[in-house]
Amino acid sequence: MICVAHTRSTDKQFHVTCNQQQSDTSFDCDAVRDYAKLGTMKMTSIAKRLSKLRTKKGLNQSQLARTVGVTRAAVSRWEQGDIDSILARNAIRVAHALGTSVEFLFTGRHCIDQTDLDALSRSIKIVDQALTDNISSTGKATITSLVYQLIINGETVSKTKVRQLKAAA
Image (spheres, rainbow, N blue to C red):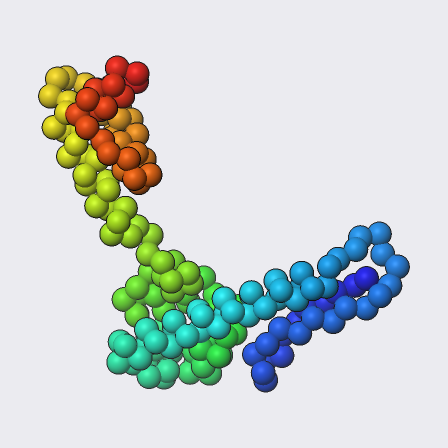
């Protein structure tokens, strides 16, 4: 069985063609179709995010294109889901022009979310309060990392627990 996934830019969908033929390896065409659909959804969400960010920034496609150094047609293709055609240097320029990160542009997530920052801040504060004696910076960093993991996992961290971690470290 041979499965081929391809896109047609006219309808922005993946099409999977499967033919029964002798092959040493067999593929589940339904799985390939599902994977292709997932890829389409990801490309579509990136395209929508790009368009939304551009609009929010008050730029039209031509203005963004000039800022990035590409044609308006290129920006239009990206916003229609042809994300594969964006080069890394252009992705960086687009993210900069739109006031975001490349990671957010492609995944919808920022590197560190506020919850992580809050947990890290609390971890540092707890360790600073619990450990008043001399401790190496490496030891303190290790204990802070452990406290951070405990907080992220929803556990309550007391000064006693921090001291136990210090004794174990």
